Image (cartoon, rainbow over all chains, first blue to last red; front, side):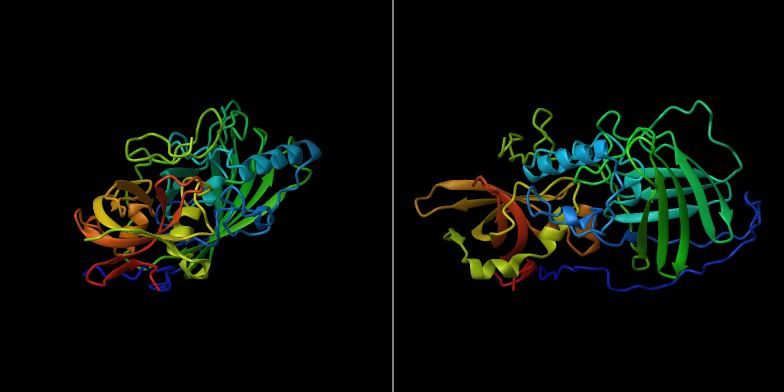
Length: 269
Length: 129
């Protein structure tokens, strides 16, 4: 039967997990109770931080949460220039060419399913989209003094009861023009770092609160909260082979998002 | 089967914002190349359903009144997302006759963003109210 009504939202929330508080020891030991974050989760809301930037031009249609970072004048000007290019469909999304991780904090700003895998020595936040992996070490290690910058950075944390608290540093930011926070061109510098608190606030909601500091780009800490709702029990997560059949690459010369025809040639060069 | 392209009136357009728009809006690329204010309807024959990441594409061959054939490319969501909603590679079998609504490219090229489809037997996929 081909009559397939398409579901607009995952309306059924089932099998609520059990949130188990644990002792406040920083490094869990074997046998310690850890929170149950099992299951598959989906970010609430659109993938644009600041809905005030949604002009309707250049594909700007997503709905997000008002969360404009407190940029200084220099970085406000950078962001404004990105928005102007976005309105002309000339601001390339760095992940549209399927080659780089989403990076931090965009890791918590993606569509498609998430998994939060809790182990005593690490927590892994897996995203189908990308795919991406965020590793948060909870085994007592410290950040390296000479850690080089990467897309997702280095995350080290501990447990405060049922809350995972971690710091993320050694981020590339927009240094190489290949990490953005969302498609509007929201960016941070290579001096950005964050303290993040993750907690299951009710059986079907995980909340991620990021306090982002960036002495190069921001005038004060920027607090961003994202929530993730539990998807129906049994939801499967699949391959995301972004390069399998990418017919929407960004033009490397202009930044324009291309649409390729069946012969692989752009229909909108 | 006679095939044709039909441009819908603006009154119908408002009805056709839904699954395809939200899917592409959250996709791995901008949807800027498509006209979010217009929906057109095509009738033709399925050539191929590319059930692939990061997006699925429906290739449909449309013949105009003079017999000229044009292959249209209609973009939909990721196979993962659609698969979780019951869509399968067999949803659009090659050779099937179908009417399809889509948000066309701004520059008039034969491509668009999927809105809905109706097969000859009356079954529908996506938004077709």
